[in-house]
Length: 407
Image 1 (cartoon, rainbow, N blue to C red):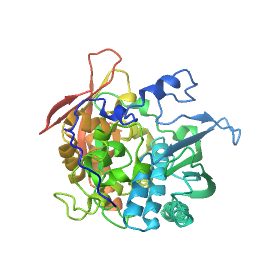
Image 2: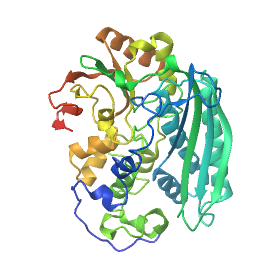
Image 3: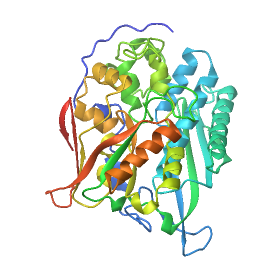
Image 4: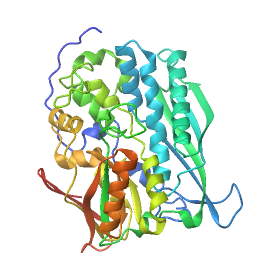
C-alpha cells in the first residue's frame, strides 16, 4: 500500500465522535422509529416474543431475530486484503451469528435454532473465494453448536452483489426459534437484591480454537479508526467518503503490530477476534439451574455495560463494583482514542459480554463454578441490584480504579 501524507489530528474526546463517523452506540434514532410497534407477548424480555404463528399452540411462542457483524465486516475485508488471504474474512460470519444466537439465548432459547445468512457485497472487491469462506464459516459454526447439543440448522441465505450500495462487504444473519412460553426467561424479573454474575469475554472457551481478545462486534468503527494508522487511508472502500479525514485511520498502529501488553495478538488479530458465543454456557447453566432462578440474562452488546438499563424492574440501580480487569485491547483503544472511561464502558463490553441476575450468592457461586469447569470461562460476581430513588428510571453505577461512573 502506498503511504498517504500524514494528517495530524488530536484525539477527539467528545461524545459525538461516534456520530461524526456515521454510527451510533445507543441507536436512539432507531428506538424512536420503532417506539410505536407492538412489543410482543413479553415486552420486558430481551428479544421480542411472538405468538406461536408457526405451530398454532397457545403454550408456545416464536422468536425471530436479525443482526449483522456491523462495520467489523469492513475490517475483515481490510485484513484479507492486507494479508492477501480471502479466507481471513470468513470469521465475520461467526460475529453475525453470535450476535443473533446469544440474543435469543438471553430469552432461554438453547436448541432448535434455524439460521439464515445474508451477504451484501461489492463484487468488484469481494470475490468468490471470500464468499465461500464466509458461507463455510457459518455452516461450521452451526455444526459446532449442534455437536455441543444445541440444534442449530443452517438454512442457507442470500448473497447479493450490490456494489452501488455496499462499498466492500456486509454480513448479517437471522434466526428463528420456537419455545414453550413457560421456558421464557424474562429480564423484567430482575429486582433489587439480585446478584449480578459476569462472564469474561477473553481467554479461550472450550469450544474456541484460539485465544479471544474479548473485542466482540460493537465499537469497531471507532476501534479501527482510532487504532490503525494513516497508511490505510488509501483503502478508501473501508470508510464513508463523507467522514472528515481527521477521523479516518488516525491511530499509531499497523495491522501487523503487536498488541501492547499482550503479544499473543497482533493489532489486526485483536480487533478481528471472533465474537465469543455464550450459548453453550447458557445451555449448561439452564441444565443445572431451574429457569425460575434466572431472573435475567443480558447480552452486553449495543450500549456496552449500560445495556442492562433497558431491562428489569423500573427504578433498578445496577451496581457493578467488582468488575473484571480491563483487557489489553480495550486499554489500547482507550489510550489511542482519548475516550473517557465513561464512553468506553458505554461503547465496549470492557471484558465481560454476558451477565446473569440471580436471587442469591449461593446460586451465583454455583454458576461461576459451572462456567469454569464446563466451559473454560472465568466468571465472577460483579455486583448487585439495588433499589433506586429516581422513580422509574434505571441506572448503572460502575466502580473501579478508574473512578465511579454513573449512567
